[in-house]
Image (cartoon, rainbow, N blue to C red):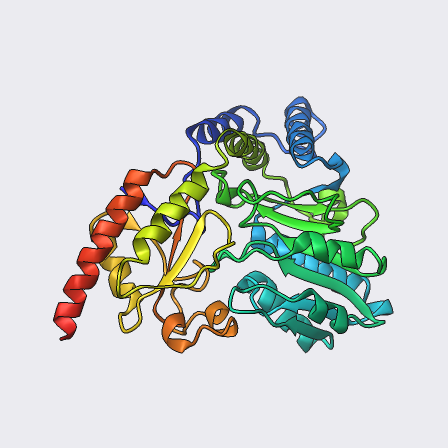
Amino acid sequence: MIYLDNSATTKPYKEVIDTYMKVSEMYFGNPSSLHTLGKEAEVLLDQARDQIAKLLKVSKKEIVFTSGGTEGNNLAIKGTALEHQGRGKHLITTNVEHASNYEAFGQLEKLGFEVTYLNVNESGEVNIEELKKSLKDDTILVSMIHVNNELGSIQPIKEVGELLKRYPKIYFHVDHVQGMTKVPISFKDCHIDLCTISGHKFHGPKGTGVLYVREGVRLFSLFTGGVQEYNLRAGTENIPGYVSLAKALRLSMERYVANKNHLFQLREQLLNDLVKIEAVILNSPKNGAPHIVNFSLPGIKPEVVIQALSKKEIYVSTKSACSSKLAEPSRILMVSGLGEERAKSAIRVSFTFDNTIEEINEFVRTLVSIVSQLKEVMR
């Protein structure tokens, strides 16, 4: 099997699965319970929070556990808008956000908020000057994806943070789901107020995530009932999930430090091979993230290619997994100005540190064979 759909999800590390099973079996108490089992679970939860905080170089009071990227993004965006609407109802985001962000802003528009959607260039990147011009007296939030989940474009987060530092009443949220452990950023140096990460994107369990909430930032809670997670997320905590998330984050960050050039080598090899295929048009920018390559096969249905590759046990995707079953052309590629033909024939390949050059070579050989067969049929 050659798995090249790591931006959709990653395979959990064996050590992470072992941890999940051990904690599930031995520390099953509710951390809110007063008895010994509850206290043992509470200690583990506190240790996981502390470990993640140290890895991210933030305070453990700033770590809020969630069920993943979608919940984290919704809590950051809606929580900020609803809590601070008394001093402004203008929000700013981009046209290339993940669906969990994009649709959250759509809902807020229905509630009377004004949203400015920043345009991007063909590389999928925003213009700082356009952001400056979009700021208003009643702007309360700027929310931006760091690494685009389809194109791999990298937004200028540090520059945006430096700009917004001059506007202390505007909160800055970053969707760091695709960048975590592959395109690292410093939350503090980038002046980020809220930041979302998701465990299953770096070999952790699904249904786990973290929202970094800078100390002093107030949010409107979307889940009510209990006082868990600093009154921001009611509900019994997923102890085995969060402990496993902490382990996955540590292991993935260690692998990045030990072999950070590996993803770049995989990307360079794939790009060099793809440009030799006549049917291929590259979509990802040259300076994009090292683990995502997007290309189009104009005139060929991508789902046919995906299924043909699957029969060879090679797995890639068309676009974001959250939208891959929709028939429409990729919204991200369309707003980047790449055109409908490229947007409806796009394929995404995404790596992790487990992938090898040999796998890339085998994928390209198989792709060339499939494209050749499809073109014969189309004649």
